[in-house]
Length: 395
Image (tube, rainbow, N blue to C red; front, side, top):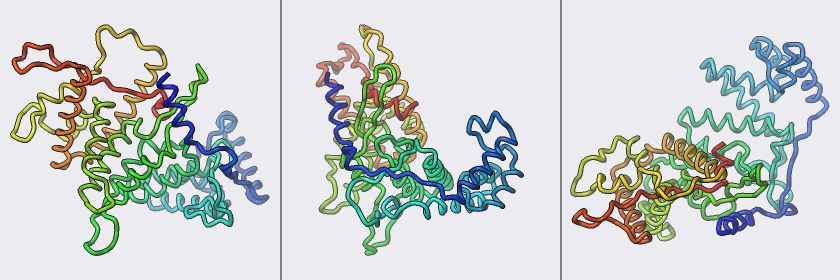
């Protein structure tokens, strides 16, 4: 019952249908002619792949078609990915930009970043299930992906933000598992007196989490139940939200978050997703077997290494197993991508102090904990908590 109330609370954050404006691209006569020529070429090159919606498998035929139809977005994107695959990044990125230009000229001003259309009321959305719209999502996703691979994290963040805004409730392009990394990795040192914010990526993470307008929604095909959770219900956003608060508190400012808020957020993340901690430490080559005057990792890290399941626990149902598998998958993506963001010495020590606090609070809630003489039972490992809505992102 408590989980259903949480699902309903997050689901209520979706604006009503009458407050949303859905746009669909419409092919012009000239574009439809090029599309028919492309379909005929697909049918001639291989009926099975054409029927399945596949692309051209002959790069030469694809290049000739692009030469004859330089503004057909589908083949521009396909040839761009072929060139990027063979490491011809200059021409591949050029075709990606050309593909984006085709879509940019077709979109109304209210859909583009800035929303300079004549009517700014309501939320502007684009439905990926419409065949003409799917290419736009694919193009933006590839630009975000290639920008991140090239280390242009600020560009990847800007593209990902726009891509998420087109359909934030469903996130069809899968931006949420990676967007927080682009935000925190885009930090650049600002010149003294320049007036620029020191860490706009961290501010974006905090604002997106606290606005409550974006969450994770999943309809179970077996039970037809609608599951939902907020952003900090995802492992990566729970930890990144805490790190963003820590960075902003370290930067100072009267309107910035306090260190206490950052501590509370990290303790909450460690309590809900405890097994991320030892994996982050392992990725950063932190020695958890030794002790020092500042930290005693051997006494703490063991609390976060197990699954926290008691021997008397009954076998989980299908929904719990799916939620756990999805949550562990998202944790793996988060650790592989973001562990270096936690490698700084002050961040590592902050993580240790919050881990000690999380373990102490878990003991207080459970009434357990080992005694100083070692005669009491060893405290159990913290148990991860995964929402069934994570099946939407972890599949």
